[in-house]
Image 1 (cartoon, rainbow, N blue to C red):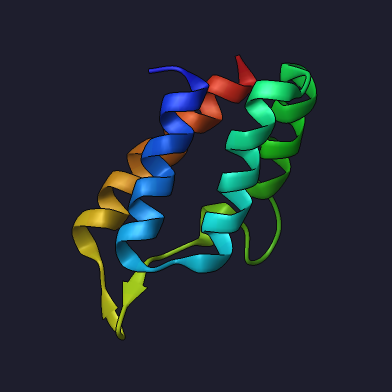
Image 2 (cartoon, rainbow, N blue to C red):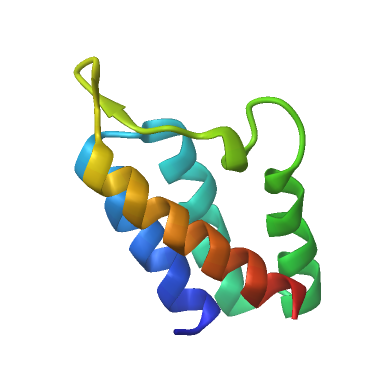
Amino acid sequence: MNLKDILKNILEIFRNVGEREWTSVFDNFLKEIEVSDKKKLKRKILKIYGGMGSFNDLVLYREGRLCYKENVELDKLRKKLYNEITN
């Protein structure tokens, strides 16, 4: 799975649960992948992993209920994305 595929899969999860803020962030990453320097984009993506309220802290809920299945899948994709941008 390449960077573009990982971003698309994460976006699909966000859209399925109605997560608007992170959808916007990842939409922008996906648009940039076509026109940006890959190293620059990878550095940009890496920045979302640190600090309070970061991508690492994200837990998905829909209508006040935990989206267990989606969170499990997101966690796998989060790890794949991190590995892709740090290798």
